Length: 143
Image (cartoon, rainbow, N blue to C red; front, side, top):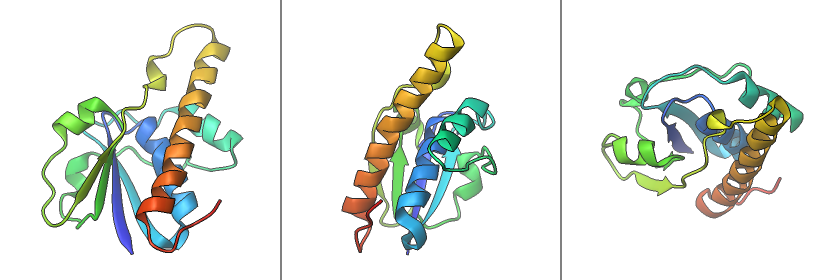
């Protein structure tokens, strides 16, 4: 079974969304972790938009990447440029992946416009996560 880390700046939105979808799509074929270069707490809007898609991330915690330095990861996925640039070295045969998703926490406008941006980013991460599981984890998984 693969150990996969999703890394973001604050481990509050993008990495939490990706962790939720990767866990859902990978099932028991991988252990998924998420962390940040900093910890900002799990964003309530991220929890809300995932619940709209029937995935519960309300029990997730915001973790600092240093908490996981002793884990042997197979893959590390950075979901923002800042995390990609600040990503620490992980020993062993770690494969790094990078995709710079927009930060929905920086959305402006009305409450509905902000939620629409969270949903848009959620949907981008959902597609990425499904593709990642289908191409990088053995015994391809279908939703």
